[in-house]
Structures are given as C-alpha cells and as structure tokens.
Length: 452
Image (tube, rainbow, N blue to C red):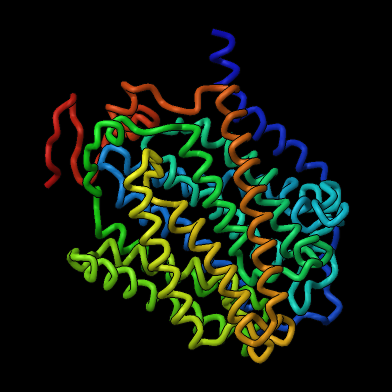
C-alpha cells in the first residue's frame, strides 16, 4: 500500500517542491538597452504562438487515426507535454540547451536555473533572450509529443510522462545545444539545420523506433486486425493546424521579420503542397484510390523534410524536396507494413525518414544566394558540405536511437511501461483516464447511448 501511495503522490510532490523552490529565485530587472527591434519582437511572439498551436494540431492529427477507444488517451499525451516540458524548460531545460557550453556538448544547468537571468540577459540578436527562450520552448514541447504516434494504444500514461521528462533532458536538450547553441559541436562542424530536422524530427523518429521495439506489438497488430481510424475529419483539422503552425516553426526560425523569413515561409508551403500531391498521386500510380489520409500524411512529411533547409534552399528546390520525401516515406511505410514492427502511426517512416531526407537534400540544394550565412550544397559544386550533413545526420540518428532505447528500458524497470492485455482490450481512454465519453457517444453503465 505504501508503495502504491508513493507512486501516486510522487509526481505531485515533485511539482510542489519545484513550486516552493521557485519562490527563492532572485528577481532581476528586464534587460533593455534599446537593442530590440519592435517588428522582430512582434513577429517572433506570433511565431511562438503558431508553433504552440501545432501541439493541439498534432493531437487532432494523431487522435483521428487511432481506434475510437484510444482517441482521448492519444490526444492528451500530446497536449500534456505543454505542461511537463514548460515547467522542465524553465527549471533546467533552457540551461541545458542554451546555457554556457560544456565542451560543445551540453549547457551548464546552473546558467539559467529556474530562468534566473533570462529576462535580464543580453539581447539574442534583435529580440529579448526571454522571447528566444519561449520560442525554443515551443519546439521542445512538440518533439516528445511526436513520439506518441509510435507507441499509441499501449503505453501507460504515467510511464509516458516519465519518458518525456528523460527524453527532454537527455536527448532533446543535448541535440538543441549541439545544433543551435553558438558553441554546439555540430554547428561548429558546419552542420546546417534551420528549424529542427535533426533536433526535432530525426530525434523523435528514432525515439519512435526505439519505443516501438521496446513496447512490442499491439494485440490487434499480432492478430492482423485492421483498426479503422476513429475520425478522419480530425486528421484534416490536425493537418490544417500543423500546416498553419509550421509557418511559425520555419519562418520564425529566421528570428527576424526579414526576407529570409519570407523565403522560409514560401519553401514551407511549397514543400507541403508538393508532398501531399506526391503521396496521393504515387498511391494512385500504384493502383490505390486517392486518399484523404494520404494527402494529409504526405503534406506533413513535406513539412518535416523542408524544416532543416527552409532558410537555406530556393523555393523551386522545395518542390523537389517535398516530392522526393513523400515518395521515400511512402515506400518505407509500405516496407514497414510487411514487417513485425508496430509503429502505430508511422512516426519513424514519416518524421524520422522525412527528417533524414530533408537533412541530406539540404546538403544538395542549400545555396548562399538564399542565405549568405549558410553554405552552397552539392548542386553548386560543394560535395564537402553534403558529407558534413550526412555525418551530422548519422551522429543524431545513432545518439537519438541509443539514448531513447535506454530511456524506454529504464522507465520499464521503474514501472511497467505497457498496459496490461485487459487494459489494452478495454481501451486506454477508460483504463488509463476513466473517461466515459467516446466520439459523440455517452457510455452509461456499459451501454452506449447516442447523444442527441
């Protein structure tokens, strides 16, 4: 009984401890020496809000594709990251990602502990350091949420919470430091990732692969049962919200209201449109019907693939990137369906593979004509840069998979990571959350009564 009580009370006790400790953080005045650009501040505030919108968008996107008895449990796993990662980011996450560099591998956790000194820190370019921290927070929130799609319908909620804490500390924050901190070793190596091809998508994709391997197959997957999507209109809504929010994700990564942001905005939209059509038309060419899900998934793959190169490649090149990424991911999904790998919503083929394709094609199509701070790619005679991108992608692939695999195994040692067979059969909405509402149907005493 004591052990059960400890597990029940531990999360709340930790939150209370953090809340009490936060009261002892010294208050410092805001930094303002006339170095801020009002247009840039307004633009990044809007961009940060757009990126946040992607999290509920992802919840709709994933929630619409699972079985109806798992819709709410899938959606909350995306949204709850907004709470967990926000608190973690303020306490120590931002320090690990952007604090004083320790050998180019990780930030000193004491640099901005409990956000101390963030509001009073020097400007990050033309915007407040605190605004940069908030913008980066939104990326940190959505990344573990992406992993949900691979382990949906069978992961225990409390185990998932522990996973995202450890993932944020030991996978996301180091990668953000390597790639975006001025002293990060990947950045110094010459690796270019404009808005998160490695930090967000490859890391989430490889964590998804690790999670699918550790949690093993769902009962329905073992029995080769086809699970119908709960609500395809949800998927359409989610796709629209993700596409809309991605403008903040990529254009905002210019960190200034300038021509580069406009270029990133356009490459983002172009790649998404081209990829959605590519996935749908490729399915038709292979004898299938044009699919609503196909276009939606393809568009998201295009958004993933253009992310690392959005501010480095030309707008015409983004068409090729979108088309190529959709075809490659589509083929990987087809291959995966012939294996025993149970990645519920194809996170690895779409985000992992899409991110890898995007990183490599950035190495092909990047040009200093678009961004003088970037590099010329293989298409412009610079083979060396392509191999730098390849090397950077391989480092992130190996690191993300190995550390995520270890995290999943560790969580499983602390408490079972997977729900019981009986809980899986009932559905996670009921077994994990005691929710009695499912897709417009009120559950009363075990009987379904349609709402009027």
